[in-house]
Amino acid sequence: MRWRTTKAMSASVLLLAGCSVMAPSPSSGIELTVYAAASLKGVLARAEAAYEAANAGVTLTISTDSSAALATQIELGAPADVFLSADTKNPHALAAAGLTDGDPVAFAGNELTIIVPAANPARIITPADLAGEGVRIIAAGDEVPITRYAERLVANLASLDGYPADFGARYAANIVSREDNVKAVVAKVQLGEGDAGIVYRTDAAAADGLVVVDVPAGANVPATYSGVVVGASRHPEAARAFLGWLAGPGGQAILVELGFGPPPS
Image (cartoon, rainbow, N blue to C red):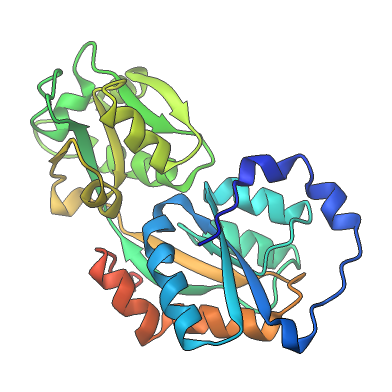
């Protein structure tokens, strides 16, 4: 399994964009580079093996990070074939800029939850406790999809009975760090460097050393994952085939097994 670190790539993106690369001959097979949201890392580890086994001659190279960071790299000319985002905003922005081959395809859904360290030193029992004095909240950067979903969740909670009128402001004041992506939020809470974080339900389920604080169903925020074929792909047909597989029965079986749902309607 090959995984590329996107942070190391960013400094060379412009150089790569200006280089002419010869397409591989049919005998050498097809290598698809897939840029994907950090929360899809577990899914794609499984999907890589399943897809390659069913499609001889095709190999996948996966790079995961914040959807926003990956979209920026694609805008700068990074050599990706498929972009899988934890939202619809980033793929649609690339499409509007003429940087995609076809329209975005919604392929999965997710929901949010609150995580705290197993010891729960801040004694967070309900979401209302996120506004408590001295609570250290780990969040992601402003452009990361989980942040936009979390802000909507906080606004929904603030409208519920039993929550203070200034719940949103108090929550924001308790944020002590902004991480690059949702996986980094999970890691910091696991290490006890924060008292809580809002993450995707699937990330919480896949992590050890955490306790989940349930979110009221009526306040939760559905997350829609969508993907697109990058316009500069050297293998657009193969890229479309992979995206179609992920949105179809083969990919959906893996997504469902790892806790994802269908795209919200």
